[in-house]
Image (cartoon, rainbow over all chains, first blue to last red):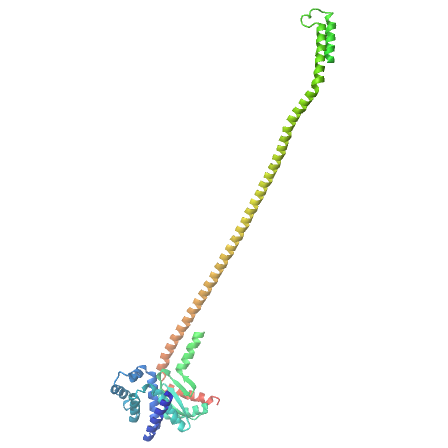
Length: 178
Length: 185
């Protein structure tokens, strides 16, 4: 039931974005918003608090996103918040990205980096990931400063961790085992 | 008796030689008569009283012998009882010695058992204490390793986060891409 609802919302939002001709960008922005929502418990609680009036929630969304996303993306997020589906937003964004990629016969590759990647590096990374996984991938970039440096890519269930945080964690485990 | 008659004859012979002692010695005839009378009386008594006297003596002997026999029997019996009592005393002493020895052995065995048990408990306590100490040492060492690791990690994170600029990040990404390209398909 919940899966049907997520798929329905994802399809609907994708159709709206496609109708506006900004499907890729909306998909990217929703994906990043979803990751931000996942990493902030306070934001999740605020957007899903039933005691908070919708206008206040819309204000929070506007303050956070503002002019950094397309107006359509902002409106779609407000639509989900007004429908009290903010908890489902990460799943809907993931499904929307997967549907968008699948239409182009591609898989979604979530790429986390501590700093934003330029287009040339993103393209090289997509090509390398496609070669390594055997699938044509479509990169969804997420900025995650906790990685310290390096890259973490996830394609389906496959995670390739090349972050400094991962290496330091390995160092910590080695020190503890010694 | 013959000696007495001879003595009387001597006296009669001596009478013819000296009259001085007539005042002391009886008349020879009287003496002879007396002796004869005595013999007659003695013979009569001997003849008549010998059996009675024999019986009296026998009875007397019997009267003396019976208590003696009874006394002897009582003595033998008493000696038997004494020997029996002595045996009983000896047996009791042996029994007492046996009980004492058995008690001593039991006490020795109990002492040995208590000592062995105490030693086993002490050994077990020592073993557990050593294990606890070893576990504590291992735990402390592990905690120390964890602390060192955490502090090292925090320090490394601070150092790394301060040193990762755009160029370093780009180098890390390039290296990541190279590693991806080197992965088997």
